[in-house]
Structures are given as structure tokens and as C-alpha cells.
Image 1 (cartoon, rainbow, N blue to C red):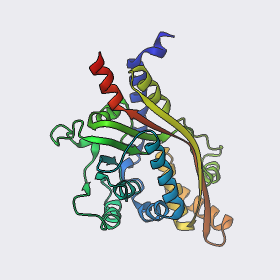
Image 2: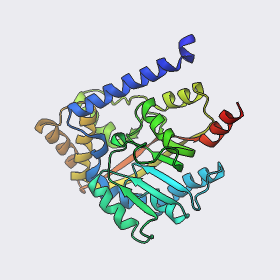
Image 3: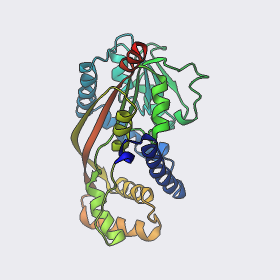
Image 4: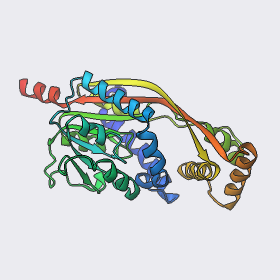
Length: 296
């Protein structure tokens, strides 16, 4: 029972699990920050569709309901992609620093922020993991640090780096349950001979360590789903990416196996994919933390 309240043990367990996952990806030649470069255009279209904007607005409304104010606020958006949140942050009057390294995402981000004043949204094309936040003057420099579904968050040390940049609030979102993906459920048995069993999420480590370390925070878990229609070639590439993430061969045999299945199952040439799961949103209140420290 004592181990349950030992933060060091939880930090080590999270780090070990994360290191193993990252090692598997690197062994398959996958850089998590660049794994979805080929989906940048599709992701951008989905993000700025009516459904995508509604989803972004819902999250921002929740943040405002917790006391976050965007007018004249400074926001650090880590893993900004094509601006799915950087754009609405700026639309509500925030000054945004958008960290993004994917060239196709940066190109789309530049297009999406072109309507704002030159100094309202600043793009930093560098890996957050490699940045020296002290040298950049980012220590407690931002009213809100925002990281939504970002591979930057992979252990407690990475969380502390985000917290170090925040003056008032830090928002982190992560999967709260194994992800659901209809294409994976179809393809996985063909390749492995077994049904697909997703791994658990890392949200439990984050929430428990925030609790053990005395942070004030709000959390919300929602269930979300979406349906997309892609070409057979795009579906094939997505399936191969998933195999690589799980250390399965992406060789000619599996490519042909999947391609043949998609041709038979989707003769129209369009593949309908259903994705979903539970997602956790965590808003850490640094201003409350600092106030408590001053009172002590």
C-alpha cells in the first residue's frame, strides 16, 4: 500500500513504460513527432470543418468555464499542428506561441494564421523536448501552456517542463482508454491471427502524480467518436503505420495482404473508418499552487 503513495515509484514506472514504447517506435524507424506527416492535409480539413470547430469550441468553452481567459493572454501551444487550437486562441484575443516541427503542418499553420497580425501568432519550428526554456525566457512566461494529444508528454519529467513554462494554467489532454479504430480491428487479425487488444493509456500516471505532488487541477473524461472516409491507398498507409507502431512487419507480404483485403472489402475504393475512445482533459492551476506556496 505504501508504494501506492510513493511518487518516485510512479515516476519510474511511467518512464520505464514510455521508454519501452519509444524504443519500439525507433526500432521501426518511426518518429512520433513526424508519424502523421502524410495525414496533415486530412487532419487540417477535419480540424477546420464544422464538426472540428465545434469540438475545439467545446474544449475552449470548458477552459473558460474553469477561469481561463484568452483576451490579451499569452498561450504556449505545444504540438500546434495546423493550428487547430492556435487559431481559435488568437480569434479570442490571445497572443500565441505555436511549437510545431512537422513541415507539412507548419505550411498549413502559416496559411491558417495569415489573417492575424504578424506578432499575434509566432511559430517556433523546434522540438519542445530540445528547447532550453530558461535560455528562451519561457520560465513562467505563459498564462496558459496547452498540449493536446501531444507525444511530448511521455513521462513526469516532460510534464514538469510544461509546468515550468506556465504562470497560471497548464492544460494536458491524453487518451483515457484504449483507442477504438475499426480499420485496425479488421486488419489486425489478418496479420497476427489474433483479435486486436489495445494497450492502456498513460493518463492514470499523470493524474496520480499530480495528486501525490499536491497540484490543484480539474479533470474531465469524455467519450468521443468520429467517422471518416478515405481512399483505399490512404487506408493502406494508415494500416501500415499502425503495424509499425506495434513492432509488426510492414513488409511486402503484409502490404499485399492488407491491399487485397481492402480491395475485396471496399470495392467502391472508399474505406469508412470509425475512430473513438475516452479522452482525458486536465487543467492544472499553477496560480493556485503559487498562492498556496506564498501562504505557507
